[in-house]
Every structure is written in structure tokens, then in C-alpha cells.
Image (tube, rainbow, N blue to C red; front, side, top):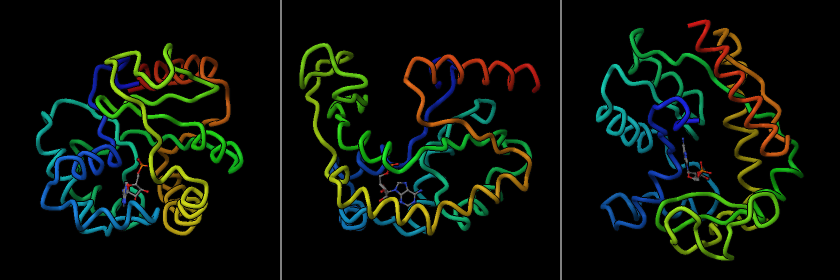
Length: 199
Ligand code: AMP
């Protein structure tokens, strides 16, 4: 989506994993939460996202992925962005838990560029190697079944209420999250074109 629209993809989980890899001073603070599948405290992720969004040009749009995950994060984000950069649309990928569990169990991630694969749905050309950059593919520690179940519980308690938060603002779009990849892409791009036409 970010390539298609020519705008930045700001993924909170990717930023946090980069902090862990680079032994950033914040690494010891965030590691235990990620390992357990819990949310990193709001004050920390809010500081991190503000730093990242500050570095983007005001005129540029962006896709936020994995942020916000709590009502507090959403409220602070709204205040921070103000009217000029306000969130335009929120896409809610509606996906049954069993599909999420099997997707994450088969997920492989590139250590170098962060590209995602799936052993059945989107296998790399060469097993264990990234098609894009030849980096090594690995299994995220928090994709183990027990941790995924914990993450789903955390989602239901903390993140699920955001659906009503954004529906009330009239900017929520429900999108089926269990379509085959190609069908999902076609539908998603058609939807993005509609949004662009309307803006
Ligand atoms: P993700 O790559 O989006 O699945 O995120 C991986 C992990 O990073 C989550 O399970 C949380 O531990 C942490 N994380 C990512 N985004 C946030 C957020 N907005 N608030 C708190 N923790 C987060």
C-alpha cells in the first residue's frame, strides 16, 4: 500500500524491533513486553511515534501500522496531529482468530529488510532467503502459539475499543482480513482509489 500510494509506512512493531537490534538505550525497557506479547507502556510508544512522525515532511501522508493500540494512544495522537495532518481513514481488517493464529504460525520475516512471508500463502522463492534482499528469514519470537494467544487477549482488552472510537468519528472502514492475498490486494487498491477520488 505504501509503495502504491508513494507514502511512508510507519510500523510501530518494526520500529520497536529495530530498537532491540540496535541496542538502543530503550531496548531493555521494551524487550520484556514484546517477549511476553504485552503492550509496551503508552508513554514510551507515544514518545517513539512522535519522534518518527516529526521526521516526516508535513505535506507527506503516512500509513500507521500497529499504532494506536489503546484509546490513550489514539487521543494523544489526535492532539499531536491536529487538524492539518488528521488521520483520514482507519482500516479494520476483520479476521477470525483461527486465521490469525495459522497466519502467524507460518510467518517468516527477513532479518535485514523486514519483508514478511508465509510458508504456505506467500513462500519465498528460496526457502529461508528473502526474495528482495537475500537476507535470512526467521520466526518472530512472539509468533509462538502461546504468545499469539496472549496477544489476541491483549488486543481484545485494549485495542478492540478503538473500533468504536474511529467508527464514531466516521472514518472506519471494515475490510475482510481473510481473503486470499491477490484478491485482498485487488479489493484494497480499488478501495484506496475510491478514497483518493473522494478526498
Ligand atoms: P507488531 O509487529 O505490530 O505485531 O508488534 C509487536 C509487539 O510490539 C506487540 O506485541 C507489542 O508488544 C509491541 N507494540 C507494537 N505496537 C505497539 C503499540 N502501539 N503500543 C504498545 N506496544 C506495541
